[in-house]
Image: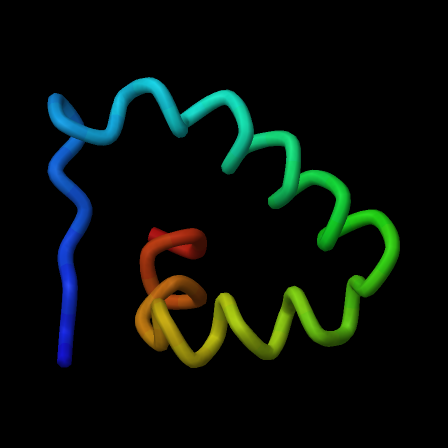
Length: 49
């Protein structure tokens, strides 16, 4: 089942999610890059605009 975050409902989780994202990015950069490419395949296009 596909779920989408509700930023108002889930706002209490944002600091923990940010902390975990930094941890994953620092400790597992290749896996983090693969996840970002999977979730946001157009990122390269937007960053070079």
